[in-house]
Length: 262
Image: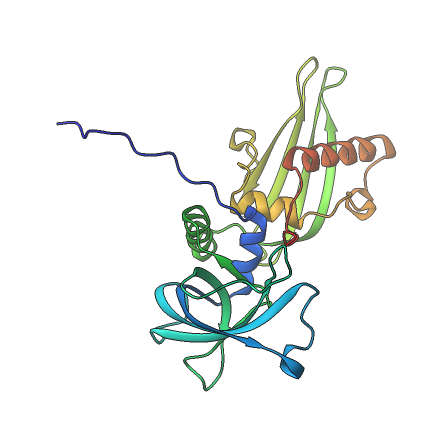
């Protein structure tokens, strides 16, 4: 028998995807917790706090360990800088559900340190789902590697005017092969694909936005094709390869990895 009612659409995350990936990559410990108490920090211990922000020492009850090296105590404490309200007043943090991106403090199992003073965000269903998806993708055995540079690139003209293909081979942190193929056909929109492996397959297509492979490319590729990548190409072909590389960057769109303004 069919279930009555319909499930609601997934709730969109508040944090940009690339910001979430940046934080997950930097944070060996990610906790979902509800703040039990918050004590305002003043004086020398509040040195370095940004304008219109207030530093607190919070203690929170753990709801879930999203990422971590092992078990953690049910109650944790940490320092956090949070923005003041429109009137310049510190917010009320008690009973807020938050997600903290942190690292353990050696010798103090009940204490954690945020990867940045403001790496605590309000819990939302969308952000919770996005963070968990990013953690799974990063820890997956077949996760796409980080891009460290461009190896070489070349353009091969086709038999018809305006026809050809560009292959761009990327350098990666793990040494695993990643390459980009751009196809030109007369009277058609350029098409491109990314391959993880030795075989360049145009059927693979480009990555979907807000996936780990998209992030690796959009946030890891240099903004221009290095001249060294086409050093062995004749100038005309090198120029076409550079054009195709720019086309790929535009298709990927902005990385948006900078922290959102608060």
